[in-house]
Amino acid sequence: MDFPDITFKFLPKILIGSLPLFSTSTWSPKPEEPHAACLALKSSLKLENSTITNVSYIHAGSTIDTPGPCGVETTDVQTALCRVQFFTNTTDTSSVRAEAWLPDEWYGRFLATGNGGLGGCIDYGSLDYGTSLHFATVGSNNGHEGNDGIVFLNQPEVVNDFAFRAIHVETVIGKQITEAYYGRPHDKAYYLGCSTGGRQGTQAALKYPNDFDGILAGAPATDFNHLLHWAAMLGRAIGAPNPSSSPAFIPPAMWKVISAEILQQCDGVDGVLDGIISEPDLCVFRPERLLCTSGRTLDSCLTPPQVAALHKIYSPVHGRHGDLVYPRFDPGAEGDPLALDLFSGQLSFTFQDWLRYAVLNDTEFDFSNYGFDELELMDAINPGGIATWNGNFSAFRDRGGKFLTYHGRSDPLIPSGNSKRMYNLLAYTLRAPASALDAFYRLFLIPGMGHCIGGPGATRFGQVSHANALNASSHNILLALVDWVEGGVAPDTIIGTAQDGATRAHCRYPQESVWNGDEFVCMPGLRS
Ligand SMILES: *[C@@H]1O[C@H](CO)[C@@H](O)[C@H](O)[C@H]1NC(C)=O
Ligand SMILES: *[C@@H]1O[C@H](CO)[C@@H](O)[C@H](O)[C@H]1NC(C)=O
Ligand SMILES: *[C@@H]1O[C@H](CO)[C@@H](O)[C@H](O)[C@H]1NC(C)=O
Ligand SMILES: *[C@@H]1O[C@H](CO)[C@@H](O)[C@H](O)[C@H]1NC(C)=O
Ligand SMILES: *[C@@H]1O[C@H](CO)[C@@H](O)[C@H](O)[C@H]1NC(C)=O
Ligand SMILES: *[C@@H]1O[C@H](CO)[C@@H](O)[C@H](O)[C@H]1NC(C)=O
Ligand SMILES: [Ca+2]
Image (cartoon, rainbow, N blue to C red):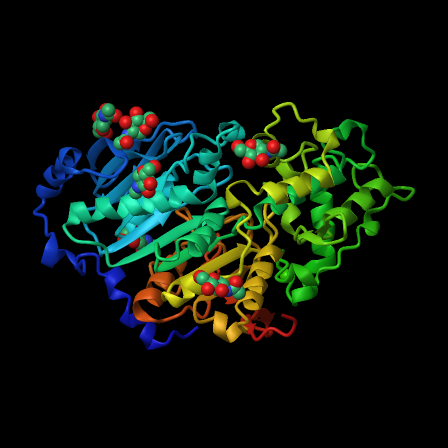
């Protein structure tokens, strides 16, 4: 693949590590100075509603202690930096715990990072990743500790932090710390997150359009209440929460057989038998082909109730009046190891906690009674405005913001169809055709990728900390965002790298990934 020269014009900012673009004029430490400048912050920083709990200087290549309720006891740090740990009160009854990591070699950029799941874990991997690329990087616990939803019970301000405020506050305070340390404000501000982090990035564009110049929002958990209902309905299809009394229950071992059958039926639809279903929306899976007939044993075939369950799982989920609640589970996603949690026979843990503690305030709720009434209550209460389902990005667009989003086509936790739906919602709300959305909002669909990372596809493109590829905007979506914001060069494709080193250019929706007999190329979409 050829890349236009113009792309490279903006690379030196990133690549020439020995020539940080901005430090010379404002803050040019001699080798021993960062250490002293860092520790001095402890007494010199005065921040609104905030307490600095610790400041420490971290040498490149150190392993630091990062204990907490999330099981990440230590974190490896690639770059020399100043670590500032702080608390900020968001109201009388809520606060965020956050950290700002300030690299010695700073290129003038600020980066806020998001969370996953129910979100009370500082994402230390992202702090390391951002600083390795010379961003002043901040991350928070999203307003509570750990991934358990009980913290939301009768705590609407804690819910508000989770739903929209924690990222804003880490950003406001993080920018102040950055300015205090380097002696001048940042030039451009960015956001990076996936899953819940993708939802947080979307929420930031909608609610705080001035916080970021560029947002990278992966596999966004948008239309959040509906997403949780969808997960519950998948469990329900195979008998959760009482799988032992359900003839529809599909034992975990059987999913291997189902996955192989789906590949059998749909792998070739894209023209190549490579174990990847490039466009799952073209896969019309016929589970009947697995029906038990004489001569087949029960561990390799399905009963009629199990086949009926698969029809439900691979169909969109609808509400009481037939309205779409959420797009369907992507065929192919059942092959991802995370799918086994979804099909364990229990209802999604995230769903249970959210409904019990944030919506119903009922710690004893009996989930075998769950139904449309509770779905409609979730919609009506929509705690903290968690839904994050609004196509009006006009404020973010009009201030010049750029939004990049991506979604794995075999993501078992959030169907990729929801990202297409979000794109279409923007197009509809803004009355903008793809050519107009292209100017500020681009969605890349990633064949053969699970949730945020993983899977047989070309799944490494710099989207999360452990997905590093080449340090070039052609191969790294965070650097592509920087080029877009600072150089006006929008990414046409993103080149992903697979486990075995093979690469594939990922296409932006509504373009399609088409096999031309030689390689996959991106073509204008026919169906969008
Ligand atoms: C934050 O709130 C706690 C508890 O309400 C209070 O003790 C503390 O002084 C507050 N800190 C700041 C910096 O406002
Ligand atoms: C502050 O950080 C230093 C260096 O990591 C550590 O030795 C010290 O125990 C920390 N202090 C507190 C109060 O956490
Ligand atoms: C500080 O707290 C007050 C009162 O809770 C709030 O109005 C203000 O926005 C807070 N400032 C920041 C930076 O969060
Ligand atoms: C990318 O850059 C970072 C820091 O700038 C470095 O740690 C990392 O090794 C580089 N990766 C590659 C593949 O060159
Ligand atoms: C549960 O409490 C929240 C406030 O924490 C409130 O908004 C919500 O309406 C309550 N739910 C019900 C079903 O009453
Ligand atoms: C979108 O939001 C802007 C304010 O940011 C408002 O002026 C406009 O009316 C909204 N458009 C729609 C279609 O809701
Ligand atoms: Ca294929």
